[in-house]
Image (cartoon, rainbow, N blue to C red):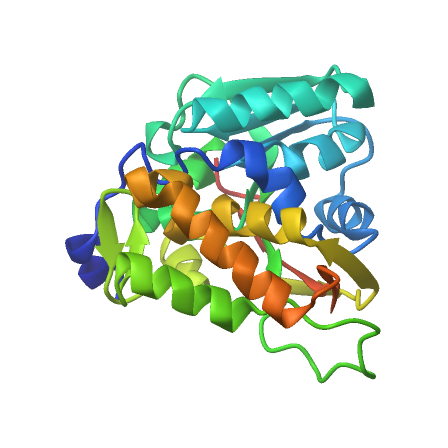
Length: 285
């Protein structure tokens, strides 16, 4: 699976070009309290170091900084790191360092860590290589953590107070503009993104997977600008992909939103957050 995926697509620096300014607004937050659950599961009590790989605009890095002596956010997109620094200032988070690099550049002279986190980013990497490197960067007993929205959640408990965002219709607009195969940077993902993290981490020498689900389900109301930001925060509809047709594409998306909800207000439920943790055996250096 991983070999086929790598044969079909190669990473390039345009993967999220133009998305950074839209990311924090467009993406739904993780479940309330996820950071405390993650800190407890990782045994973080205000000491130690944490590395967030593929940190984007610092979403997880900033939430976890209070639980460690130093947090390091690493990302290959300079605009994402600039957004992360900007977001850190009003929160008065001072124990974070931002590093411009790819996961494949690790260890990058960063030293050892108690925990390394990948929040919806591991699938973009050369996973076998990165997992082995991360294991060597962890303290004995340290943890590799994977954070993502819970897939296949249980049915919603009741109707929403407003129309749901028309995600499928927006996807149809993207397909008409960019073609049916998912775009990613300068290439495309014929087979989609990678999965089977358990197999990769087992082969890298980590222990059994420990799983935590942080419940959510709160209703959030979103406007048209929020949903346009969501579109442009995604790798498969990043602004650069549309070239000179960007303004026309945005107008078409906004027309879909007006048709779905003339008041341009939408509701959806926050997804639960899934945390999976693999630990480096204590006897391994």
